Image 1 (spheres, rainbow, N blue to C red):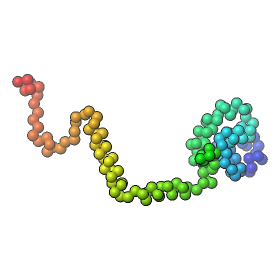
Image 2: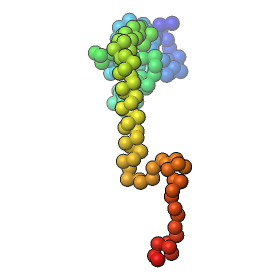
Image 3: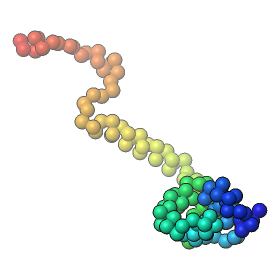
Image 4: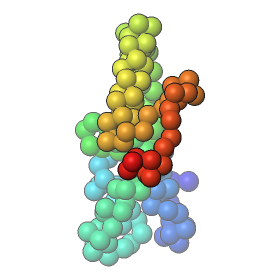
Length: 146
């Protein structure tokens, strides 16, 4: 059913995100946040003050909903209308550029940084084995004073 043919009462039962999805499906074109929200306000016959009071919440709702995508031109569209070829292409190029040696070097650097972090916090406690401690002699304070 077309949004224009829906009764206000029917529209009020839908979330703003659902109405946005219907608008974008029917319009066949992308729209910016303000245009979409103004259209919803008009459809629901809400006061104009709603725009300024709720536009931030509306933007956040669209941003967190996986059905929508914000395009480079600042307009929203349905994610289903856009293929992920570009994402796949970028990630596959990145994978091709990295060879095993680069990956091993990155792992070695990370391990070195972790070791440096372990010993650079001012703590003088180090990992030791039993072999390292075999010659250690424990004395109490009284023996030290003598």
